[in-house]
Length: 144
Image 1 (spheres, rainbow, N blue to C red):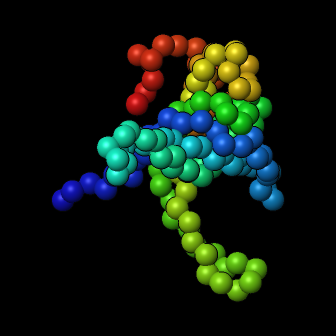
Image 2: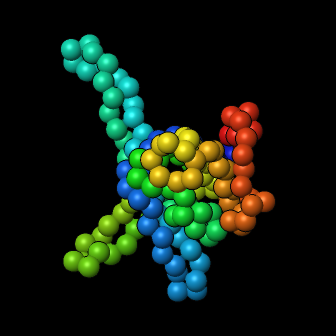
């Protein structure tokens, strides 16, 4: 029997500042939107880049860290899973969306890049925002 795999790995730039909110029970949830370019040839044979946009949801302390350190334009790497959801809109129509639930977010770029405090920071799921959870390492240390 084949195993089910639901895994997404994306590297792109934030298209807006993170939006942090809390559930009624007090759990932090952060919404991110990233753009990831895809290169392809157009009808004239020239290489062009087409942006693809993805909605990311980051829960708990990891979401709080994203809201604190990330800003529009900042490059990030996201490791997570796809989740499909459906709801009734205020106008009564059925709406649906596919989003990415982040298991980990890595902050990319340096101090001079858009927003944040610089450096690479890896925030694993369920980690506290304390200094023990901050990851300062090389690409060889990336878990995906």
